[in-house]
Image 1: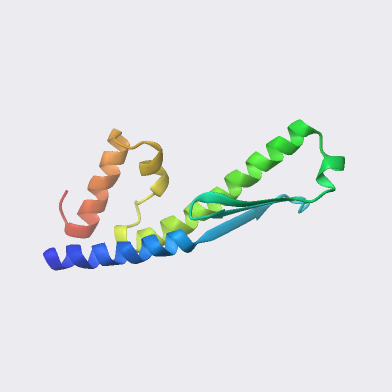
Image 2: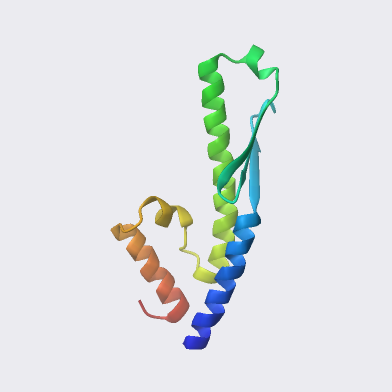
Length: 120
């Protein structure tokens, strides 16, 4: 079991390095707003100058938020896919990140432990 632990720890270290370097992007259907998320944070926001003529401020704000959410979702999907290779199919970074210490987060940790070590 100790060997398995070290193997998992090494794999998780590799994944963490990949996640730190990973990015995902999203854009509006018309291509006037683009967002890139890198390492889990917004790294780029690009607005075509035409966006100011096409949309009122409230609509533009909504489009930016929606595009950020899609880019973040794409990033999370990439991260989850990679972590699931090691931690099992039930792993979802959003569950742990949004509700740390909750019963749901604790149950996810137990599921992951059972997947890795057969107990939990």
